Amino acid sequence: MACWLMKTEPDAFSLEDLRQKGKEPWDGIRNYQARNFLRRMAPGDGIFIYHSRTSVPGIVGTAYVASPARPDPTQHDPASRYFDPASPRQSPRWDLVDISYAGTFLEPVPLEMLRQMEAFQDSLLVRKGNRLSVLPVTDTQWSAVMQRVTLV
Image (cartoon, rainbow, N blue to C red):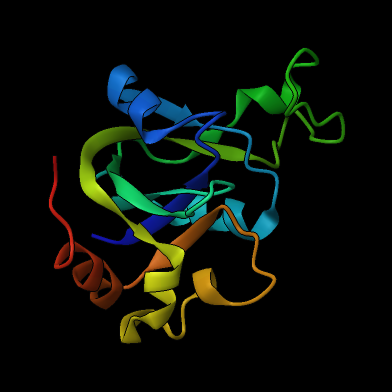
């Protein structure tokens, strides 16, 4: 099992939204490196859900990958904000995976705490200028976070 971190803005789609829906396609990824990470995901992989653009950004809970990567239909939908007119229908450039809710942390793990954790010193998450919305997480990083949290 691999582990991942997926960033979301809670006013657009939060962990609570995922909890209520149960399962949701993670669409709208329009960065090649993040897309390549999506393509490496497999059903059952663990996911940290990270709320960004909040007063205290951080990891708020967990989910898991519920489907293999497949073409993101929003890239071909002119009504979608994720429409990409340059993406060929015969070889779509953007993918998505379905993710399913797993759990909510009693207290979030803030970015500032992650920056101080030894396990995250080499993480893309704490590098200045990193804006990827999908990142790999090592087993050590997963364990370091899970040892500090209580699930609701």
